[in-house]
Amino acid sequence: MSNLYGDYNQKIDYVFKIVLIGDSAVGKSQLLARFARNEFSLDSKATIGVEFQTKTLTIDHKTVKAQIWDTAGQERAVTSAYYRGAVGAMLVYDLTKRQSFDHMARWLEELRGHAGKNIVIMLIGNKCDLGSLRAVPIEDAQEFAERENLFFMETSALESTNVETAFMGILKEIYQIVGKKTLTADEGAEYAKSQSLKGTRIIVPGQESDSGGRGGCCMSSS
Ligand code: GTP
Ligand code: MG
Image 1: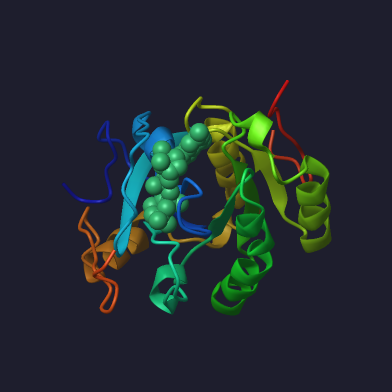
Image 2: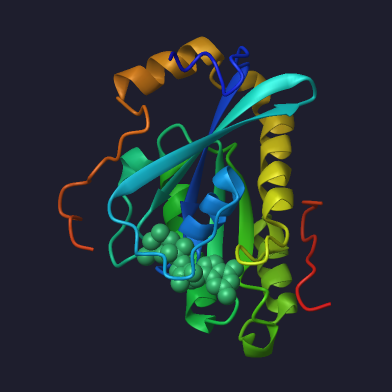
């Protein structure tokens, strides 16, 4: 099927590419699995290379196809191809791992070095189901998000907390801010074809081994 049509054969008005970034094991792939397929796995394997999944939804009576890219958080800098054309980014840390939060500044710098100026960025503190092991106070994350002008939310892919809210929040924001300038469905289809993106897994050479308001919040450990 052509990329012009979504799950129910409706015409796609917009294709929005969103990239997931952050350290290994923070839960990027599980957040995506939860959002795209409502699945979760406790023994999820580290991602190899680059993958993406799509979900088609409606915003303001328009059909929007979210194309969400996921890659390995391990070691290396992500290549610029990963960021190309992205209109949204989720910077994910594990709120039980201080280091994964401390690395957010570096990920943000890399993101800003590669992505367009209008990209909508959301900081995500994942694993809020593990409240008793929290190593990143919500205030620290809120402060960082405010300073860097990012949206912020705490989530749990395991318990489904705020996952839909976070993805829908970023998508609505993209729709409002850059929707008019983003790929139309035709351009999106062409782009996808040219990149042979249709559900394929792309192995990047050298990596074969292994309510959305600004500063807004979360419902971690109520
Ligand atoms: P890389 O692919 O290596 O970059 O890691 P990743 O960020 O994709 O992490 P992944 O989604 O594979 O999750 C890593 C581990 O954390 C797995 O064991 C998941 O089951 C677990 N995990 C992910 N999300 C949550 C969550 O919300 N809560 C809890 N308790 N565990 C989670
Ligand atoms: Mg992964």
